[in-house]
View 1: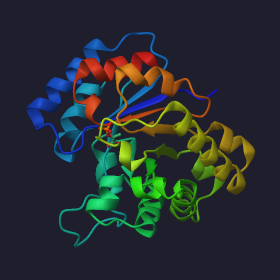
View 2: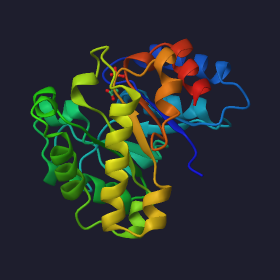
View 3: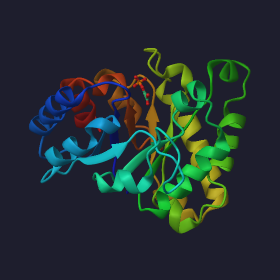
View 4: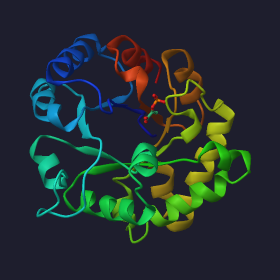
Length: 250
Ligand code: PEP
């Protein structure tokens, strides 16, 4: 049985005061009998404060990025150890905005995944095709390359701590969601890819989130698909009501 995992990626939104307000609303609004595990991923500048507010709640903290080196002359970067020291348990890696805007390639993402795991952070490893790649029928090829390269050198034991988020880039922040069938098709393909590399038990138990314009009115159908184990939510996690609605539907 895979427990649904709903994560909110706040992106470059919410200053400190706004972060405190949003996380307090989420804490106060969260029902007692939600099935889902919940993660919030605020910007770096809010992590420490949000962590304090999350104490004595079940909500987990994640970061949106990190660098793979331990420390040193890497101006503007943060390390896995720094994220751990402010209470992070998860880190989003390989998000399409990092890949497209900041030119992050598979090889760099692989190094980040390994560095996160060494420090005990669980990577939420994002993959997904661009619109033109889907239109050319290249979706499975792209996803397959991203999985292969991103997970190069990862052991079965490490794979137990990795979450994959399938996020078709054309569905991120656009209001266009993949249909539940389109998403399920790719999710089951990803599970098969993982089953080729790792023991069946690992492939059956690891979490694959869907991301791309998930909202309270489409989340329950998406999350009811066999291989969709949760959601990585962007826009809809910036309002407590809509994030809570997605959590309740899981
Ligand atoms: C995301 O950025 O991970 C995302 C899924 O964004 P949105 O929900 O806004 O499409």
